[in-house]
Length: 231
Image 1 (cartoon, rainbow, N blue to C red):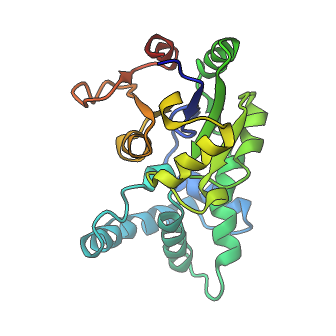
Image 2: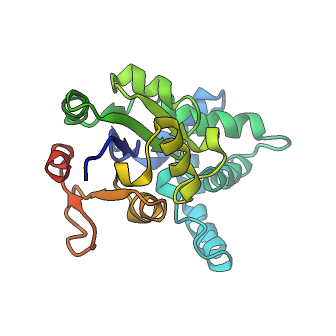
């Protein structure tokens, strides 16, 4: 099959981040939206959050499934909890939006070292390059800042649905002008990326950097540049 387009997940795939202690990271994020919450207090809030989340998931199984993919309902719920426990009252929407969208400006984000080379190689083959992500609309600015040359970016904020919903993949296919059979999707999350893409009819590739899923039953690579061997 001659593929015409290849789509990528954003965070954990083309875009990585430097690890940081959660309480330090969140204290800095709060400061960026004008709130002074010391790291020690944030650490105390996070301890309470663990038990709170367990109760939430018990009553709503699967609630936190998409957390690592920046699922908006999850993060709205988390930031509401964080801000309330920090002592804020009233309408929190301004702060929550700032916290959610603010991660796109985080200095700890950086492109995978192989990403720029891979995109250049794929472009030389005439492939349409795209990104599909559960993220705010401003994702395109982040990609431009990192030098990630993509033909199109489709976000959950733009489409109104999140991975693994096939609709977000179909929106990208429509934007690229290709059929599902002509496209490949690469991501680091099996539920969101692989299963979502496969349900939409695309060939899915799992980026498994730690080789944790050797028997996953789908095409798998441990480095971005290995993707070329599967096309």
